[in-house]
Length: 369
Ligand SMILES: NC(=O)c1ccc[n+]([C@@H]2O[C@H](COP(=O)([O-])OP(=O)(O)OC[C@H]3O[C@@H](n4cnc5c(N)ncnc54)[C@H](OP(=O)(O)O)[C@@H]3O)[C@@H](O)[C@H]2O)c1
Image 1 (cartoon, rainbow, N blue to C red):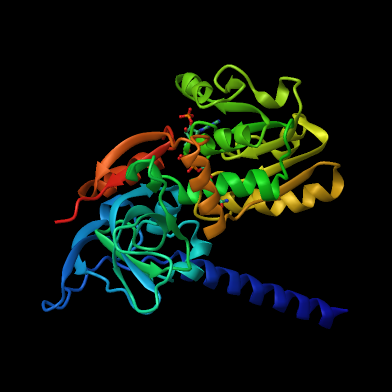
Image 2 (image 1 turned 180 degrees about the horizontal axis):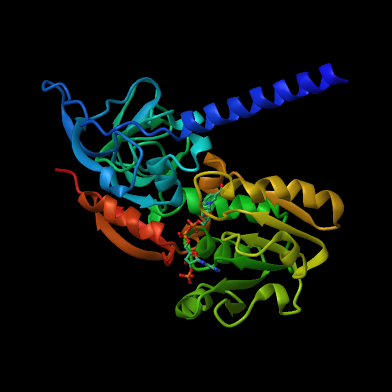
């Protein structure tokens, strides 16, 4: 008994030490060095760079090598890019656990930005589906730059003629997240009642319109200043969270899309019909476990109640981008744009995104020199 106790204590001490070492390792932030100078014989472009994790203050606009299209790749001149919370999670390396992928101590990839729209400027060998001059929408690392290259089979599609480059750039992460949350995780059907918590943000403004296009009855939750905007994009009902708490209002929904995570799962349950689903899209900020708690709780709570609590990790998909391009071409989805910033002000755009007060999408306009 004594030996067992000693062994158990020893293992516990070892496990605690391992957790402390892991925590110290993943939370370590290397000092910021300047970006290495690019080779002078190469053609250059302007791009946004970050050499260390930190606030938007660590962002720099630099001369970078203009990428050349390789086998199966297209080169794109970027006209507009969109800011997403994803960008400042990578910038800060937060929550720390993501540094296991993005780089321990400092970022492995020094580029920023994902969502873009632009024009195809060169084709690598073997490209079949694009031609020079095509307008495109896509998602690729390093979108805060004058040029990027990507494989034609990845997340890039042709831009509908009737939408602007700014509108097109706002689509990939936010609209795909909304679509996959409603259609795949939420299994939304026409006639069902859906509540969108965070209806005025990047994901929310797409979710309201996509849910309407799917034939649902839509209730959007936002603050007083955004009530008219959320109505104007098609919400049947708008709940001002400054005046009313949807979890105690006595109304029940078939699906809740939660971009905010400001009510507990059990509180949300009061607003869910017996067969309802809650899709957790976003949640509280934090470097350690705050953003992960909901993700751990959801499958546990689902075991004991009739309703479903599921989390979403959206994935860029060419098919979904094409579907969203069709919805926009038909005028069923019109991106809501809040503010436009030039490339030189990406840091300010990210600071604004971090306030959590964006009204639709924040766009970076990129003019090539
Ligand atoms: N799981 C995934 O794959 C995935 C993908 C994309 C995004 N996300 C996450 O989803 C969340 C939303 O993303 P986003 O791009 O939509 O962010 P966003 O554009 O920054 O959202 C800002 C909006 O949130 C609203 N908001 C803030 N507090 C609120 C509250 N208490 N109740 C209702 N609305 C509130 C704000 O409205 P007011 O100003 O009116 O308060 C603002 O319009 C983020 O946490 C993001 O990290 C997850």
